[in-house]
Image 1 (cartoon, helix red, strand yellow):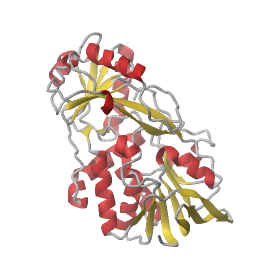
Image 2 (spheres, helix red, strand yellow):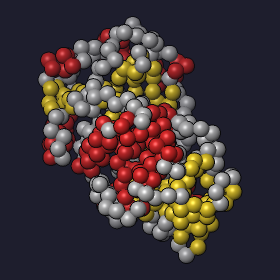
Image 3 (cartoon, rainbow, N blue to C red):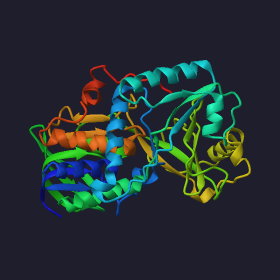
Image 4 (tube, rainbow, N blue to C red):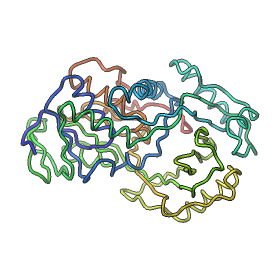
Length: 384
């Protein structure tokens, strides 16, 4: 391993890889990624479900998605790897007028940001878009045809391979143990492979970002949150191009992936680093599946395929992007709150632009790390 580097990125998941690639693409050299895993994809990126959407309720998240969407459309040409971007749509189902009003308000934000294709749909249109779901209690919904699915590990592979061609080095199986600091700056990273002198450090450590920041004396409000996913046996009961379908009332959602159904139901249980799957949760999800997706009523879950991953949650469920207050050469790109893979193209481009002295493609001021101490979090409704 090099004993000095210009920019060290702690975390070799999709965000760290995107940062490295975009920095190298901008002409920055002497970039090192450090990751404790033995190989790519062993962290949160490898457990992401692969949803991609621009249907958000805040302008900044819509902008991040739309920029990322353009990058995904040219990703194969740019990196040589197909990101698996399928524009099959996201379908949101409302069970009362309040939820429908919320979706309408979010759509107004989306349209103002240029996502004009998101539209309200009636129960009849929902039945045509996804005939496999139950319409019991559904009063309407919203659909955006340009949302859909990606392959997170392929996005990671694309960024890592393209970054390597531009000279980026990756040190796998190398944990960050701490920092040597002086005069409000990090001078070196202490790792399991030795000490590395640095000019700038990028914290892209995902759910573990707060630990890395704490090593530099920074209190970063990012907390791991377990998210579980249920996988069914092979089935032809739902088509592979069905839209991601989300019930607004409790967040239960279903999609097709690799000839199976993937089902999620978010529960807000902070569990540290636990990625176990609860049998009681699986039983509840299986019952929801049978009631809400009658097409899957006779399909069974495959317990050994079910899994859990970790979101990196910030207090306002929006990313934290910018230099840390109190450590002038520690750049934070954390807290994506479940949207890290889909927003990785934008977050990498923003970070690289700032670190290379250029104007970022999206103004990240709303996402600045100091917003919480300033009492200025991003305000967003809870449902979307």
